[in-house]
Length: 97
Image 1 (cartoon, rainbow, N blue to C red):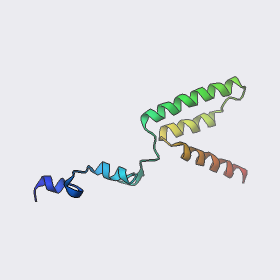
Image 2 (image 1 turned 90 degrees about the vertical axis):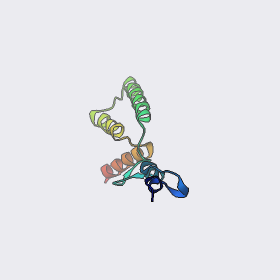
Image 3 (image 1 turned 120 degrees about the vertical axis):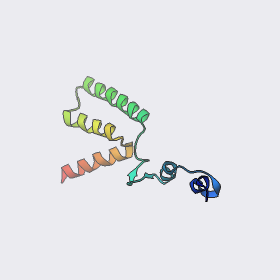
Image 4 (image 1 turned 135 degrees about the vertical axis):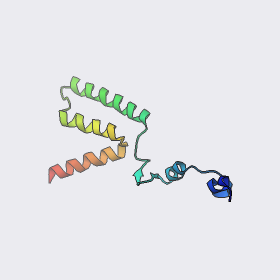
């Protein structure tokens, strides 16, 4: 078997392994791909957070250091909105127990 055929995917099409795993939403070592934001989306989220922090300060209700650290963690980890909301709701539930 030639090396070109060995690399050929379904019906003779070449498929990179990264594309294959991305199709299923995973990459090797089971790191979820679809739940992560792209660098551009992270930049937009950061800008939106900074604007919201400014508005909160104008209204006399600035974010405390823990809140800022939490939102920075979301950006650093590249979490999507659904995952952030789930985390915050879980934190509220744990605090009210």
